[in-house]
Length: 100
Image (cartoon, rainbow, N blue to C red; front, side, top):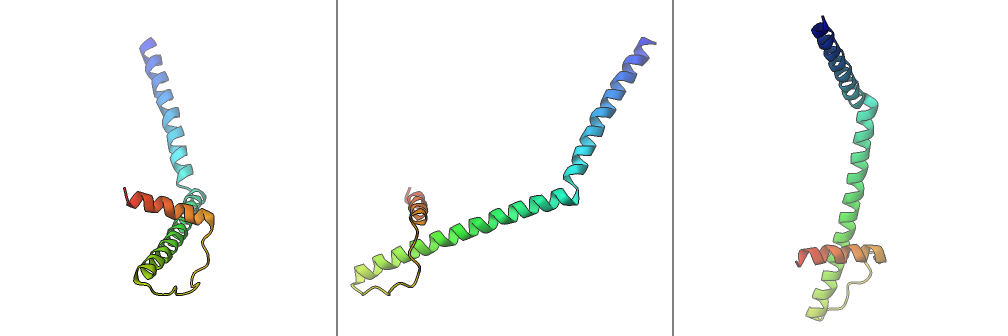
């Protein structure tokens, strides 16, 4: 009789644990949760792409200025907006990673 009660208790505990796991999976698979995850990842990707292209513009403008000075040509003029100090710092960090 005691053995049956022990196994009944173990079965009830497993059922409660499994029920909690299933509810958690269903909560994460709900349309609202999926849309929040997709929105967060797309927003982060857009910011990363914007930062990347800002760094590319700064680096290309700097390289163009270096090449023009080496060839003795006049500067092409202000085609790109002046980079912000934060952007220059990011470009310097990216350049230092490339030269390692």
